[in-house]
Image (cartoon, rainbow, N blue to C red):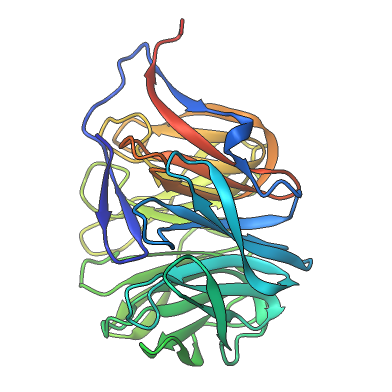
Length: 375
């Protein structure tokens, strides 16, 4: 069965399944218009999953706009993965890149931070029903923001806000536990072209580290966290147009690995080690696939993580053999997919795929499990 480990009120960490596909079986995802949402052809940049109304299923927060002013939404799950109700997230349109969800004020409800391009990030507090009220702008956050993460980086139990900035320094804003953030602190390198963030304990010292994916022929970087002090280390061979990063154990050695996704279709796998050091990468993927989003998921139920790539074109599952060798399977119609989220949307214990499409409807793809070729 597909499993979750609930790390906090907002963050669902995917655990691999324990059953696997037979050699003659493929993965089936249900594609149906009833599971589409945000039909106004917004430029959706990201989708975030959280149980915002406390009914036990995962709802969807959408960040719309990218470079243009559009409305963000909260879509409420009817229980079977269909989004039949929606609330406005904010009462003005803006150029949003991501919505991060977490309990910012310690009252047990899932609050939201909307991170926007060239505009201040905005904090919205949840009344417990999935209805959000504006609380405050995040001070000194008016930047060329491209992605973000909301996670406790300093061990004080309050979620902190990380923002990857296309032009200028990447930032960390310390959560105060009262629904807001302290002033921003730049991460310690010059920074240029940052577009993706991934977080995880890469050196197993108990602190959460950061991987920053960079574009514009810049080198991607690890920010090693040592009790709140960050040490930047360049990932070798990482110059390129990398939009997303993933941290996951992909090679069967129990050490966290890193994957960078380039818009030319190539992906770089950096194998983890006991010391947290990373050598030259192994390349996979097909040049010509414009990869813009990436998420780890065990879709085939064999106990290791595969990678689902959101593309400009058909989306792709990179199926892992358990040792970091990947085969390729395409899914869905052609779209301009900017974001991917993973979660059990209909309560059947299987991981489903949610995609954020720019210029067309967003979609929940329901996992149908094992399917033989003649079905």
